Length: 450
Ligand code: DOR
View 1 (cartoon, rainbow, N blue to C red):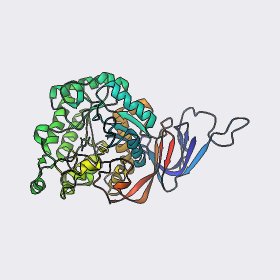
View 2 (spheres, protein in one colour):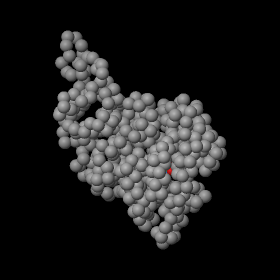
View 3 (cartoon, rainbow, N blue to C red):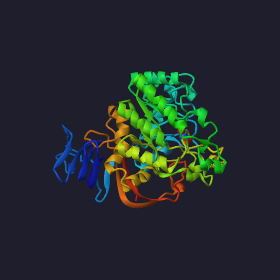
View 4 (cartoon, rainbow, N blue to C red):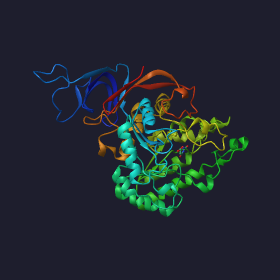
């Protein structure tokens, strides 16, 4: 099916497009963008024939054409989540590739990168192959697996990075755990450098964080819960910056939650260190106060921090220190989250809510819409080298037709029970937000909501 999206406010930072126009999609690819202001803004060099419009001549069967009126709506590239837990294989009771990608599409994501802490761990090519095959069969959007750095994520022996890379892993991470052994991490940087892919580091000094379940401070003492000091994150951020400098390997810091980490990354970038970083909506939306009533839905690792950390994270997003907003989508079963705070697993189900929560940054004036798209689509694509796989995160002619249409004015009430994800574990239940995708086009397939 060919598609024309008419009269939308098209924003694409990759081409510096920000204005009203139409978009033509042919054979699952973007064909052209026609700006209403200055005639044709962006067109494929050799546009394929026959023309997409109805009424083709003599004997040539007309292609089916769908017109979408996007007047009053914003048309942007499909979002790329470079940090999600799809839980399959092994934890299908929490999420599957099918349900996770369905939640992604509902939330405006057309590409999801899945972390390797499955069972078995994605630490070898056969698990990678399984994920890729399953995603091709059942996924509603593109899925790229992230391979483990060490076997079983145990931090003792390097995983088969080369074989996983050949099979389709686009980065390596032991997410959920840090690689505590610095020599092991050094070797990981050296190998990943030869494949040209980033190491995504879960920065947590386990010797400092052990037993901790929330941010360390007055509140943790008051609640009688063991705290995790922000230094547990900062120490490993610093070590990994040092290792990236030593090896020249690409470091991507996962889920930045503290002021100290933002400062270290900012300084490292100034020195030219090959480092990029992400944060997640909960780290700029909630403080540690969210766990005051022992709400396990607000238990996450790294933990929610303080107002000061939130301000630093926002500043980092604004000045470019933090390149990416990822979800860290971590669905868990209700029964697990019903355990007492100390025993409940960490994680927030994020795919259904990430965009609406992030749009608040635009309303607050922290980011422009174009910058938000950079953080949620263009920068992940660049960091992961996705242009090599078909253009992603941008609306350039020839790119995959991964597009979302957002109603920025529509008020939405977050209702966990209605999440598409199996994971209903969110601390945002009942929040009123503005802005939600009304159409997601994933590789040319249209999904629509009222
Ligand atoms: O809160 C978290 N949950 N942080 C992680 O690093 C892992 C994740 C999970 O897999 O549940």
